[in-house]
Length: 286
View 1 (cartoon, rainbow, N blue to C red):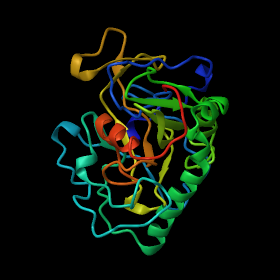
View 2: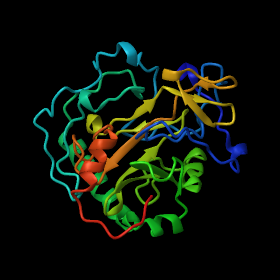
View 3: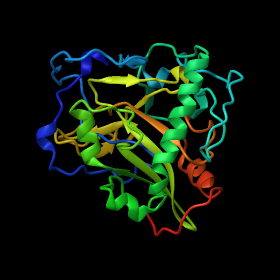
């Protein structure tokens, strides 16, 4: 998306994000979504970190043949500490409508031993740091607030301070300060199901695990110039809004969704079913 970058909207820091309630299970935070009419920012002052990639123009998802996706686990099954199960190669079946990979460059190269270790380390560290947020009260006390409507099967919480730190040049994959947490509402209460790391639209998308750690974007949202989500393209964008792409994001899962801890995404039904399989402290509804 090199031709569609936009300026960071830090000046809008005090303006809350609004969400379009019919969008199910969309792991999206659109504080700085971009459209083709947005201006490009100045060149970054620092070099890209080792093991990272920059975003490029995504493919048309409507005609996507998943050529940049692995269609099997490639024999990769990596043990880790997360309740989500073994790490495997991301698969095309994990893609849903309105999604694209953050890079159009194919990513089906078998991960090196170093990348496999890095993926395991990322999952283990993320899970160790996020365990405290199994308590919904602890997450709220730390500054996480819902950015999708409460009571849905899957609800996304965001720590705006952590995301603004990222916008200001902070580490994207900071497992101690994930920009977003994802909860599933189950009959036993809310269950922490994932951390969601959110890059900036103009920055790097580090892949320490190589193709085990791939970033995606959502492409079917209608946003106003103030970052409010007011619809989806399937039903047409309302007047005063435009279809804008989200910043890249990467999940680390803590429940056994199909594909394991680094699966690209999962449906509401898959997430809730997986959440019901893990132990969790008593929570109310997220």
